[in-house]
Length: 280
Ligand code: TA6
Image (cartoon, rainbow, N blue to C red; front, side, top):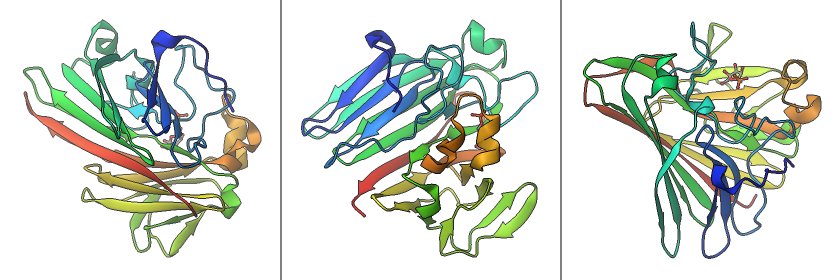
């Protein structure tokens, strides 16, 4: 497992009183680690070769995508938010939870890529066996803008060949530009997979089922779910991921991928994703 450098100011350690924990990097506003109770085992994939010094996007955890999903001219893939330093603007703890509120606002660096004035808030709440991520965008300028993005969640699994994803049966999806409808009750990943499922913006409930764990993935607001695994040939092309690591991860991403949301001056939009640990 990747050893996190000991730079306390760049990382926020989250805890519940009963002992669940998580780690957020202020670089990228990025959740790096989540260890829910009762077993305190890592549930997110983080590459051993992930770049954690702030010079590149982090491979694993939960990258924050904004202001666009995927590629766009003159802007980094999946947008600049995962490359920027975020501010922690609030921390609230109580008997059952620990909440960290992060913010990224337009500044000289963001204006190199995008002229809009915005606030992007990420509110992460850790409970004993679950973690909530609330993503909220506000147009703080005088002109409308459109954006896409989301939460590029890398879930950990022991072996992708023994992993299934439930909740997508009969859901329409696009892969490599072609339209399909999911025929499997339990989706199994057997090759390079990069699908945009039209799961809708009401509550979506999926479940990652693997030999040692089940993770419930609940999302709302985001109207699409991307399921991505690079498989062996893709992993070989990714320089910050070991070749065999495609076996250990599945990205289940709550996103706005193919359609942008338009915000008028002063308007806000939000979406959220909750991960819940369940014994399998
Ligand atoms: O969300 C899936 C995806 O867009 C894939 O097409 C794949 O390239 C992946 O994200 C990773 O992108 P990244 O820029 O983090 O290497």
